[in-house]
Every structure is written in structure tokens, then in C-alpha cells.
Image (spheres, rainbow, N blue to C red):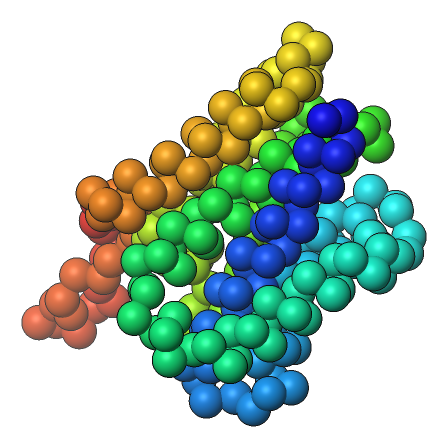
Length: 220
């Protein structure tokens, strides 16, 4: 199997995973069939569309290659019809979301590097590719985006992007090292969920008796 074929399979797998995640969120919000399909499409392809626009690859692959849109639509529709069974698989959905995050991190970073984007920019594009679809999903379903909460999500993608850039710089772009990068993102996300790791947030202290503005402290 060539590297390009492996990347295509990884890309389409990530599309299916995020489409399922987006469609599940839409079903939970009681959206109709079109709404479920649309949210699934955005969740699956939003990050890739953003990536392609940034690296000036037009039209974006999501529109140029029918397999991407078809994978997203079929998966979202399957979730719509099978949601009673999927509703009992919350843990499975979280694991699939982590897998999608990992796959999109690797493919997004590699495509940025192949487009001759400098290392720092490639890391950011890889992270945005991974989190862009989830960001769109949460906004469409009126949720605070996961990437803005305390959960370790975008940081896991960024760590994976950095590893991909380092591997690329040393010529290690085969399936094995890239799989290792995906496993890093996947593992970080699952461990963070398991151990409830989170980034620090700013918290307001209770108002003072004299009416002064509360000071901001740090909560870990």
C-alpha cells in the first residue's frame, strides 16, 4: 500500500468518524433529516475545507472528490436511522471522535507540509484541520465548542502536529511513524478524558464587600 493510498483511507475514515459524531449531536438536538445530514457534513469536512482554503488548494478536496461528500452523507444518514442503537454507545462515540481527531491531525499536517507551508504554519493548519469540523458542529448545535472548554482537545492535536513535522523533517513519512503520531493524539485525548485532565481556566473570586470588581485568579 502506497503512502497516498494510506492517507486517502485515513482521510475517509476520519470523515466517517466525524460525520457520525456530528450527526449524533444533531439527533440529540432533535434536528430533522436534512439538519442531521448538514451538521454531519460540516463536522466531517469543515476542517478539511478550511485547510484547503488556507493552503490555496481550490476547489477544496471535499468538493473536488465525490468520495468525501458521499462518505459524510451516507454516514450521517446511517446515524439518523440507527440512532436508537447508537444512543447507548456514548463511550464508543467518544473513542471514535478521538480517532477522527488523530487521523485529521496527521493528514492535515502532511498536506500543509506538502504544500510547502513552513513548520509552524503546518502545525497550526494540522490542528485546525482536526478541530475545525468539531467547532462547526458545536456552533450549529448551540454548544460551547469543545476546543474552548477545559478539556484537552486542541492541545492533543497540536502535539500530534508537532510530531508529524519533526518526522517529516527527518524523512520519516512512512505508515509506521505516521501511525505513531496518530496514536499519540489518540492516546492523549483518551487519557485526558479518563483522568479528567484539563487546561487552566480563569475564575472570578466572590465579590468584595466594598463593591470592588472581583479579581481574577487561576483554577487548575
